[in-house]
Image 1 (cartoon, rainbow, N blue to C red):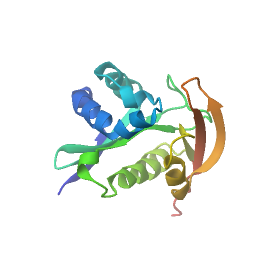
Image 2 (spheres, rainbow, N blue to C red):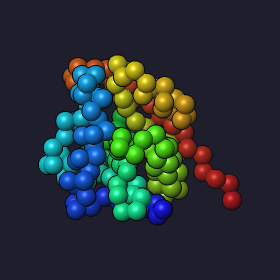
Image 3 (tube, helix red, strand yellow):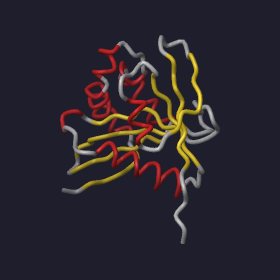
Image 4 (cartoon, rainbow, N blue to C red):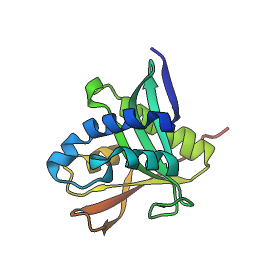
Length: 166
């Protein structure tokens, strides 16, 4: 088993689209209007081009993806921090902790250690039955909310990231 973390490339777009649509099927069933839930190839390509889109691969297969919207980019988050979005784990692999591994890697290696950001943010639909609780268990704290005109209330979370002492 060879596990790799890397930035997605344009060549990954079709595989990421298929993974994302599988992963977001429950979101569509809940009637929550996340952009990723109904993405098409052009939107995936735009996400890869405009944001830092990371993947976790195992033996050459993409198993999970998460993107960071940067404060200086075309879609900054609400707090002037790197903003996590478009987080998806392929449901075909089952519950093996892959998403947690990727999210921890992005929080620690990319946001904290590489970008030197003191915190990271993300948003999710208040109407989702378990995502808020999942993020709170990971140390995220509610930091605001907004109605973005998508048919749900977006709850914003923030997580402080401590730099390791050397």
